[in-house]
Length: 251
Picture 1 (spheres, one colour):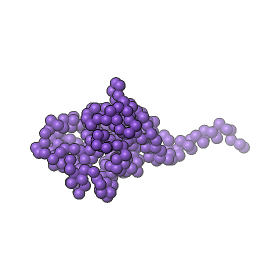
Picture 2 (cartoon, rainbow, N blue to C red):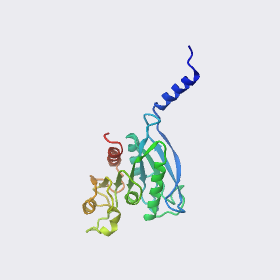
Picture 3 (cartoon, rainbow, N blue to C red):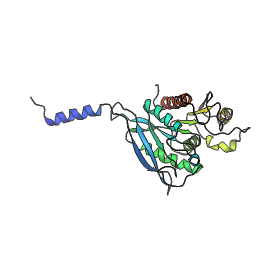
Picture 4 (cartoon, one colour):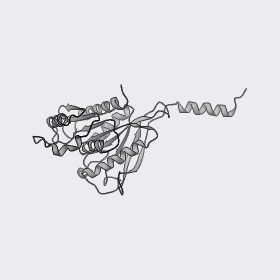
């Protein structure tokens, strides 16, 4: 006996709903936070999913200084993105205002926190992403903006800061790092032992002073630019594993 078409159709839908979904990627546009804010351009990458009904965690990754050539195609940003996708985390990379196809005038100050907040809102609006499991990562200037967005914005599960600029002058001028004072999220700081713009000792001092829930990883021999491919890959793995542990659990 031939099954009724309605039943066959329902079975096909059920099978499709539980079939693996291949990785996807594509351009996105979204507004930065705030009235009259510019529209920003980015790329959304979704990892392979067990089925269409399984939302995944997401991470916004912030690039280095827009006034010094920083873009979402920076090698450090791409290394973090690649490893996050391998571990099942969706990623949004984007250009800060005034960079690439993003509108507005390029800046290298706290104005760019609004860009990160806009990117977080974009990620949370994606049907395939669990809005309760969203993290941040950033490199250099992007690390500063990610940390500041953690303090200023909606709930972020965890934040990873790569080559967070502290300078090497001692003692620490705590008034320059007040964005850290209200942070209670799990944090990761990855800094090379040969970094020209970030000090591991100062980072540890800031963590202790502000009683942060943070782990500091000194990456032996790495400079601020992670020019060595092996150290670049190690950095990406450290960041992605930290985020996966907090957004997914055991990996």
